[in-house]
Every structure is written in C-alpha cells, then in structure tokens.
Length: 213
Image (cartoon, rainbow, N blue to C red; front, side):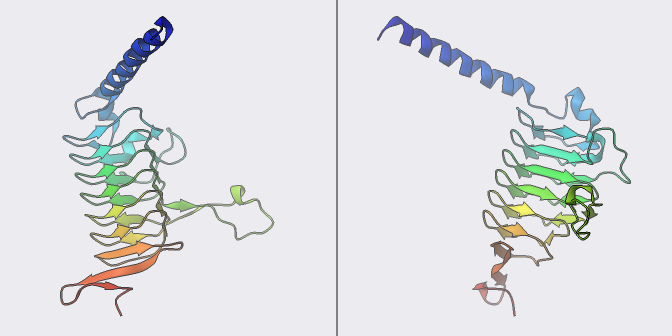
C-alpha cells in the first residue's frame, strides 16, 4: 500500500469520527437552551443532527421520549416571525419516531398521537395551494387549510404524503408511497394513490381484505 493511500484512509477515518462527534454534540435534548424555545420539549426527547429547517418553535410541541431524525423539517407558518392563531400548531405525542428527511409543515393544526412510527421522507401538511380561479396563478391563490390528526400507534411508510383534512384512526398502517386524504377508522391498512383501505380488522373476524362493509 502506497503512502498516499495510507494517508487517505487515515484522514478519512478521522473525518468520519469528527462528523459523528459533531452530530452527537449538535443533537438537541430537553436540557439544552434551544429546547426552551419550543412550546413543549419533552423529557427524553431529541432532535438528531443535522437538523432540517425548524422554525416558529414556540408553536411546536414534542412529546416525552420522541426522537426526530436527521434532516427532518418541522415548522409552523411560512416564516419564523409569523404569529399564529393558537399554540401549539404542530403537536407530536410521546414516544414517536420521525424518520430521516421527513417534513411536518403546519399552518392550522397537525396532531400526532403517541407511539407513532414515521418512515423516512414522509410529508405531512395541513395546507394546500388552491387552483379554483383559472385566471390566477396557483401560487397567488389563497391556500386552503384543514386540520390533520394521526391516531396513536400508527405507522407511516417511506414517502407517504398526508394531505390536509386527513384523520387516521389508531394503529393505522400506511403503505410506502401512499397519498392520503380523508377520514379512516382504527386498525386499517391503507395504500395507493389516492389511498384506500386495503385491509381492516374486527375482533370477530380478525384481519380481512378491503374496507369494512
């Protein structure tokens, strides 16, 4: 092995170690000063580094034991100085895991229950652009807002999109890549674009295909 290759490997190992150390130090816990800027930052909760875009922290509530992964964006409103009508706008319950690269963008109300697993690159929002006026560019039309809630114990697979007005029941499983809008009961499996009920559960019959009749 030549000297250049040995040096490259030596330097690479130290760069990786430094990056791990920097991310460990930059992870935010409840005892950090930054955590005090949130509406609530729970015991045992953590914002892993590197953090994504996080602003209007005073309108964000993170429950006890919840872990928010690297590059996750969590925000209320469209800029950090915006005054919202109530707080919190985004409420994440206890013992949740929010996967890498996900976005939770609230304007009115987004509520996640407890023990929810969110896969990587999931997008959750309570506001959509409007397109009703064909003469006005979509970006200039007044957006439409509708509250979102996700029941405790649910699991959202990779690349799921949760649109405004969605209300998921407890222990709901959403298949990867699904685009969800609407109200769904407890104990169902959703999938597709737009999402529909693929399986449902009843105590009498167990898991059955399709929606409950």
